[in-house]
Length: 347
Ligand SMILES: *Cc1c(COP(=O)(O)O)cnc(C)c1O
Image 1 (cartoon, rainbow, N blue to C red):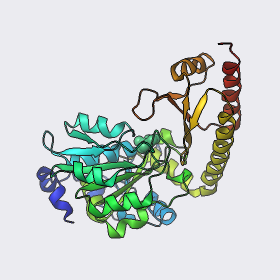
Image 2: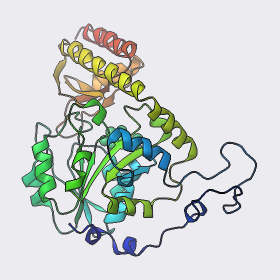
Image 3: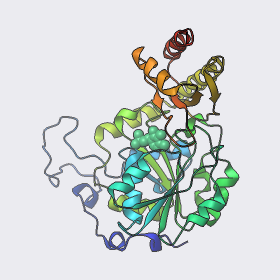
């Protein structure tokens, strides 16, 4: 597949901003090229625009070569950049599979890029035939979220493979929750698919939503396009430092994930015992989608108890559902105590 044929002509022609730090990369003693303040604050210098130290660690952990890694100001920046690279406003479109993450639509709306929707099946799986049927010459990007938010399930590998084998545009697989799943990442398929982009994030399993750091994995031509369009210093020095520190403590991340998975199965079991809980959907993420009898009433009741969950009851295919993030043991316990109080209210 010829990736450049999918790219907006103005982006292909773009001469990117050349920063001081990208024009001179060697070792030197005196840097008088970037109009920085010379007095040492620990943060007086511009950060590495391509974040090589962070990428080196990520490369080892994810088993993906450094030149196939892009880092963004959250994966939300990656979503926005992909749309601006590939979709001509007022002409091209993205394809999304609702119910799914809301940012694909918001980023497309901001860019004045149309949105085509192919609903997931009632068991929350993508329908490859329907997706391909809905795809036209202007369908540039398919956003596919697995494990999916807000449903929590992983898409069947055969379905994703069938889509990857035929979809003529960019296939962006959002793996924000991959660390909570027992399925392999699609990063291992990059060699076979020049149009594949896999997105991951430091916001969930790594416990670093506050630093805003997202990852994209793709073959070098797509990574080069992302680098060309991004703001020169899109990942700041503090973020790069915090990420490096976290990447040194991989076992902490693994311990958190274990704890959250334990919490998820305990919570699932205990929620199932409540008479007002109708269904708990299978989850490969750090949350549970739960269908309850009176979602709005329960949602309000929990707010009054100081417990906030996400009300997804108006979302198609998620009717009646609340999305509950797995918390610390005590937080899960507080939720269960509140639910016992709710269950004991006479009707
Ligand atoms: C939480 C989440 C993200 C994370 O976005 P960041 O900008 O990296 O914080 C991405 N995709 C999905 C589906 C999510 O639920």
